Image (cartoon, rainbow, N blue to C red; front, side):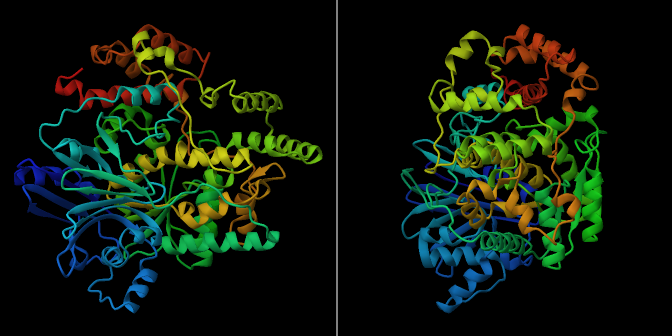
Amino acid sequence: MCGIVGFISSEKINDDVFSKMLHSIDHRGPDDNGYNHIEEFNKNIFLGHTRLSILDTSSHGHQPMISEDENFVLIYNGEVYNYIEIKEELVLKGYIFDSTSDTEVVLKAFIEWGNNCFSKFNGMWALAIYDKNNKKMILSRDRVGKKPLYYYKDDEKFIFASEIKAILDYPNLNIKPNMKKIYRYLSTNYRYIDIDTESYFENIYQIEKSSFVEIDLDINMKTKKYWELKEFNNYHKKENDVIDEFRELMIDSVRLRLRSDVPVGCFLSGGMDSTSIMSIAYKVLKTPIMAFSGITGEEKGIYDESEYINEVIKDTNAKYKFIKPDPADIFDTVNEMLDYHDEPICTVTWYSLYLIVKNMKDANVPVVLNGHGGDELLAGYWDHYQYNFYDIKDNDRLEYEIKHWHNNHNRNMNEISTNQKMIERVLNKEQKEIDRFTDYSYVFNQDFQNENNLNIELDSIKCDSLLTKRMYKELFYETVPASLRAEDRNTMAHSIESRSPFLDHRLIEFSYALDNKYKIRDGIGKWILRESMKDILPEKVRTRKDKAGFIAPADEWFRTVNKDQILDMLSSKEFEDIGIFNIDAIKELYNEHLTSKENHQMFLWQLINVFIWYKKFFIKKGEK
């Protein structure tokens, strides 16, 4: 796991710039670094790398890695988990390897198969390869975009990096805030910030996930997708066979992500997803791993899931570490986080997880597994039940599912009629899907609202299930992209690599081809995961009907311990200088929160982020 940075430029750039850009991402790779500078046809080609040694920690894994014939130069951030299998295939073709690293496998796979190699990789990556023969740079990102790769492009140069800060260190760039992104982030609960490749900085973009890009020396750029999840047929197999196949895929996904030459741990929330990973590692693969957990508040089963966490720790004989955040430092911590994130952070969850990761450094566990994607693959969110109800056409079956949903979760029955009307109106184009979320656009001044009016339409997949379409949007545009970005920055800030077994592309393809009944049944979500984990998970966790998620009582924090900080922010000249807010409207909104008339904790968290981010990158530099 590493950081990469590079450019093609017709401008003369000195070595100090190379060093500064590379040094800005030292935290992503503190174990080693290097760069390669090539001058061709009055162009400067630069490829830099900082290394976090996970596989083959010797000098044989040093990057940039150059092919034997010196025609290809590779810099690579990530892990290709099936590198052993690909290496065996390449050996049969006559390739000889000098290392046990996956980096050498990636380089030689590209030499053998060209851009077709990306479809063979099972893993997470952002990479760049300079092809000297064809005078072009190839960049690629993994299927779901776990590893970041940003770029800036104009007629004279193409600059890319794992993190935006490295691009900002290139001299004389005219960088401004992307106000449309800020509007989208604040006005729609962050859900629609990833519907395009734009960043929070104008003219800085992300390389598309599931894609590779070719850039020639004239800065012409071509993008092509190598993987899409667009349409498929449901599985028509016996139920037990489907469960067995899912189980084997899940186990193999964890097995591959345990490949490491350094210790591996796991984030453990006490829920189904992280517990499945911990339990598979210990009980099936005979690999005990350390658990890292957080308690964010006093309320049992909501902010304190230690009852379930302790059950898993006991069942897996795991070493563990509990962290409890102190919200009094939230402004200082967000300021520190934004040194690594470079962009506003989606939810307060990531504040708590940042503190967990920060405390992991002492444990000397450089790799950690997480449960991201389980909800979006297997129907783990509350609104998924409503889409499932809409999909059920048999009245008896619908009545059965509603009854068990109500009994299992003690939900208000009025939710059903309200949500079914919303779904109908969206399908009939009488209402936008964005209207599911509280509209905070009124907090901006009128000119800013008019300039950034939202018109959001998201691509989906061809299938009959509304539930599957909903989860597809979460996987590619909403919750997963936002979570992966925050997860990468949180962990890499402390030189820790995070891996996501549920986001193995084989599991994604399998899960999205499943009928709803494998996801929600008897009024409980993640049905197939529960069935496939029999005799692996502790029963207390496997049969859990409630869902907490790793959340924090930020609503109460923002009424009490952080009250003075928020009031100071709203009254500051720096806040006013951002120039886009209706400050009276925001103060009224905060008063609603203070009096518990409304719960605006999500918006307040995002407002804090925008304020600190804008101050850090723009007001500090004298820009408005």
